[in-house]
Image 1: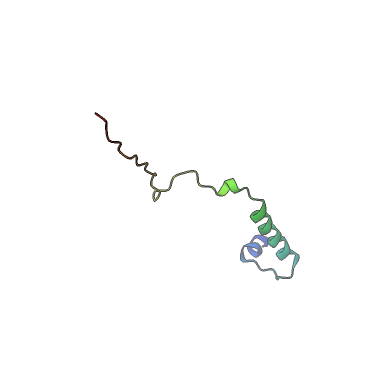
Image 2: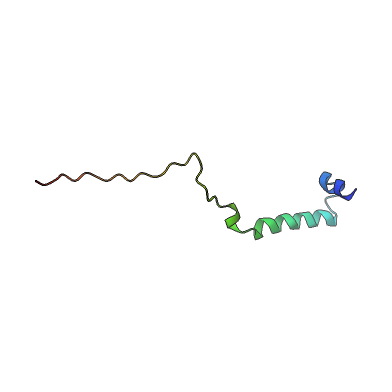
Length: 60
């Protein structure tokens, strides 16, 4: 019964349950390490950068 109430959120906004939920959300936002959200894999839409070297005329 309690799981159903949590999933459907059957609690009032001024209850202690609401306060606990808000604190958990705030803790997740501010205490989650930034590294968890950094992408390490290259996305398919990203292309490698090309380095263009100017041609130097050869001196003969």
